[in-house]
Image 1: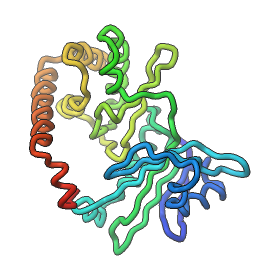
Image 2 (image 1 turned 180 degrees about the vertical axis):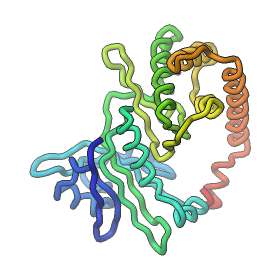
Image 3 (image 1 turned 45 degrees about the vertical axis):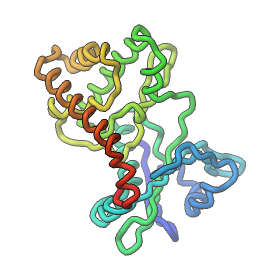
Length: 273
């Protein structure tokens, strides 16, 4: 794993990968707000959290293509930061855990945070930009079942390996898995690493529940679960399929209920999310 060092800037505290710890890079990050509004900045996602692609100085005439995620905590989420690490810090730790375990994620460059009276006022996670990758949700929508078969088989093997290493991504949704099709062999990169946790053992029920956010077409779910089980060196158990189906039904119902009641919009208006 690439080593890192502490960042102690006039405005921010954080950590940075050693390979990025040159004076030009550190100086640019010390004024991250100007970096996000500077020339070449491209807003990729704008919402509760904003994602901006920027050229990050690395030395005379050199830049790196990176993405900065600006986490904005409000309401209850902000109150929680009094007792826990910022989302940027958790994204940094989760990304480094994946890299250390030999799984792919955009290379973590740095994280920065500023606290005011103990609460997180600003936090940013910086990672290398990956070009040419597509969200797996796009493939679910555009690929035929025959085309998806090998991709889902590879994904089943990958997620079985992730779980076997004691890594649990608690938001394993279609938007958080990127696919790079490398000479026909798909590679998977995991995003939103602030939801990654490293635990001693990922139990069978937890594994099944962890897979339900994936929008795998219904006709292909059983085959996907079979590949997942085979990668663990065991046959697919009826109990696992049963718990997966129960969890999937519960999750789908909850998503529909949230949409019907517009719970997320209400929470944002009340500034509790």
